[in-house]
Amino acid sequence: MKAPQDRLVRHLAIAIAVKLVVLTGIWWSFVRDERVGVDVEKASVHLGAPVAPLPLPPVINGAQP
Image 1: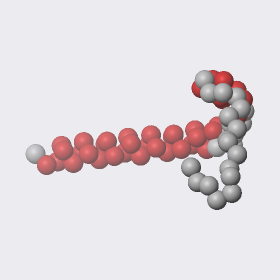
Image 2: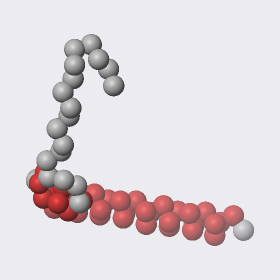
Image 3: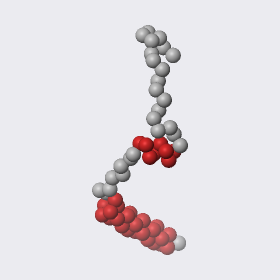
Image 4: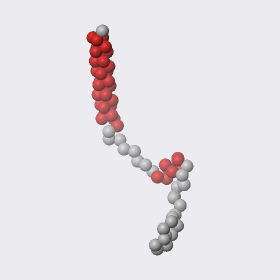
C-alpha cells in the first residue's frame, strides 16, 4: 500500500518542479526587464484622490499639534 502513495507523491513533486522551472523561464524571458512608470497625477485621478495634497498649516515655533 505504500508504493502507490510514494509514486503519487513523486509524480506530484516532479509536476510542481517542472511548472516552477517553466514559470521561472517565462518570467526570466519576458518580465524581468520590464519596468512600470508611475505617473502621480494619473494614479491620483484613478484612485479618486486630489491631484495636489492640501498644504499643511504653518507651524508656530515650539507648538505641537
